[in-house]
Amino acid sequence: MMKILSVVGARPNFMKVAPLHRAFLKRGIDSRIVHTGQHYDAKMSEVFFEQLGLPQPDHYLGVGGGTHTQQTARIMLKFEEVLSRENPDLVLVVGDVNSTLACALVAVKMHYPVAHVEAGLRSGDPSMPEEINRILTDRISDYLFVTEYSGLVHLAEEGVARDKTFFTGNVMIDSLVHFREKVSKTSVLQDLSLLPSDYVLMTMHRPSNVDREEGLRDILEIMRRIGVHKRLVFPMHPRTRNNFERFGLMAALRQMEQLLIIQPVGYLEFLQLMQQAFAVLTDSGGIQEETTFLGVPCFTFRNSTERPVTVDLGTNVLLSDLSPDSVEKAFSRLLAGEVKAGVVPPLWDGHAAERIADILLEQPVLST
Ligand code: UD1
Ligand code: UDP
Image (cartoon, rainbow, N blue to C red; front, side, top):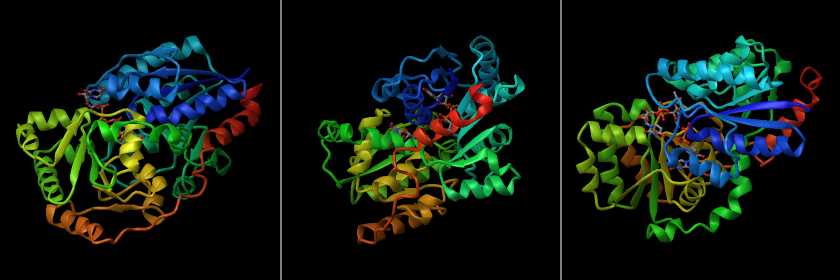
């Protein structure tokens, strides 16, 4: 029986591993899960296990926060012990967080084959910690599963052998498709006294936006201006909350009547908030994809994206000029009915994890 050890660590990992775990079990694969504990608050971690039907992880490494080096090194030390004990046929990592690179690196050093799901994405911005994680993880992985065409192009340009890369679609969208019916039954709109299309949903957590006081002040001003037209719902990421507090800006936030600041919400509630929103403002990676799938207008507060298909085919608009004036202009166009039409990208159909599981089962090196 093939044994696969899948790694989760941070919020965007759980909804990617859940459909893979289901597809592995369905095919008789011994599927085990390691949680590094990079994210550890109940609202950033536990809630996803409950809602996504993931079993308790087989191993919890409890690494928590710290500098990139501290976090990466702690994960590596602890994952090495787990890997020696588990001795799987394959280590599977998803996305681009520190847990992704740390575990992939340990695995190759110990001569275990590595699969990277969501390979080939590139923002072209080396100052993003995730870009380093993406490039290095892809460089050392044996099986590279790609969500969009740009990924295939990048991997080919970087000299990755063609027979290691597979265009299989988007496992994050698998989760969305799987849970969509349940999503509509959540009472989050009533609980927050919101009406469909009457609010803008906002998330921010990229260091380039939230680690500087100036960036946070711009975000405040942008919210003030959008708040003239629509209510704003802001489930605040812990990094962002810490920084608003550190720079003494929480009081200013709380003064905004149109703004509803809430804790990070569960997956089902977040999908419901997203699909009923007038628009989404974000700097998240995954949310650019989910809004494209749902056909909801999305403004991304970044000057580049590693997910260009969301701009080329989807509803995503990059706001490279984050000055309040320019964001206000873009928002006014949306208010005036200038909505960017979009289509769902190829293979974002709810079956990516099944394709990945089938490909892995076909690999003679893994199944002997
Ligand atoms: C991480 C990922 C980022 C991803 C994001 C998703 C890296 C380099 N960054 O960023 O790619 O988009 O997760 O949300 O891997 N904290 C808590 N509670 C938690 C988790 C974090 O309070 O449950 C606080 C801690 O102070 C921690 C800080 O947030 O030090 C940053 O957490 P960390 O995991 O290092 O990075 P994120 O900004 O969350
Ligand atoms: N998400 C959630 N609750 C929230 C905010 C986001 O469940 O309060 C989900 C969102 O639907 C998506 C994932 O978390 O599936 C994205 O994670 P995040 O934005 O933290 O990370 P990124 O994709 O930027 O790496």
